[in-house]
Image 1 (cartoon, rainbow, N blue to C red):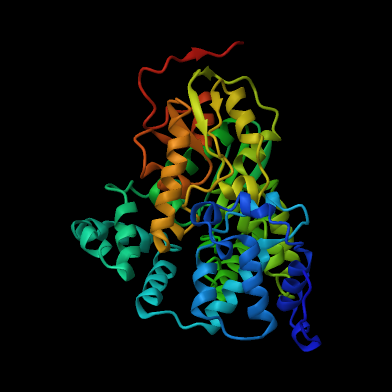
Image 2 (image 1 turned 90 degrees about the vertical axis):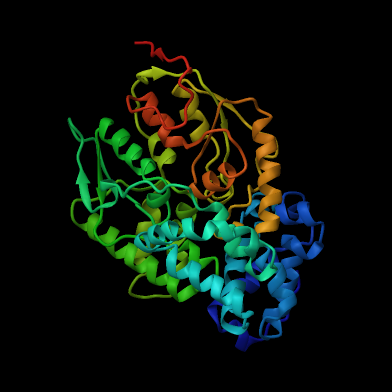
Length: 443
């Protein structure tokens, strides 16, 4: 795609990078076939190609964002299916990230939109605040229907609809500590505790620590780490996102320098995509560029890490049919596609792959709150494809997908690592049917 940025504009490294990304686009339109919003809405401006035109026009003319542009950029899920499809290597992720930061700096949103985003940015990245907010949601739930009747208040209705009826107690697995294996140590990793996940489902990290400890891996929960920054990053609040990234880089760098780390294990694929991008996010910060690149190089999804271990035979072979949902951040963001399915099959599960597995479920961080109508249509489409597999349980690697899909089906949905923990000697995950036959693994 031809561009006409001035030399002064290209002196800005963010603009220069965006210009190089835009120039790689050849208008082929392959991205439209896999873009969830284009497939759902049929509007060219709600496709990656259409958004690239809007971003190009906005940045080239060095103008503030307007309502028209913001509407279509806001509808982007950042699922990154377009990057998997693109034959020209257009790095759409970095382009739309720059556009969102530009929007945040130059566009004044309506009052209730600003309020909604401020609430999300203030609450979700902080586990104690998020836990308190979920407790308050019980009081607001009776008013969800009333809020949903007014378009500007629909995000608050969506928050109440997604809030779980009960919140698990805080887990010791979220507190700074070192969890050593019972026998000889085969490795040492740090684990990201995160922000929303340990509140909504602390059992995921508990299962990860149990499984890795049984496999001889020491698991460290470092002092000072927290939210990866993805939630605010995708809202264009770049300085906040970089602040979270720096804090985590410092926390993990201390562990690297004091005992070493084989990996930084991540159990939420949305977080993994962001942390693996820390080197890029902090590339212009001389104090953090090298440290961030080092940290990003150690980041691994838990299934990615487990696939590199010499695993023993599983203790159980459940023989359970599992519909595997590959989160967008897993398959498109991190390009991890085979490891989770191979591990499940090795553990004795029968893996079923739903149709249209490349199409987003509509979660996408805070998307199902900020764009609830589109998110609901994508969820229903995803649930129909999953239920058509006839599987007994859904497995996935991202807490956002678990919450989104779980809100539209009665099928139990668990994290992939919980099933692996069960097969290798851990407890049966909550929600698994009691009637499931369990066979002892072959010796």
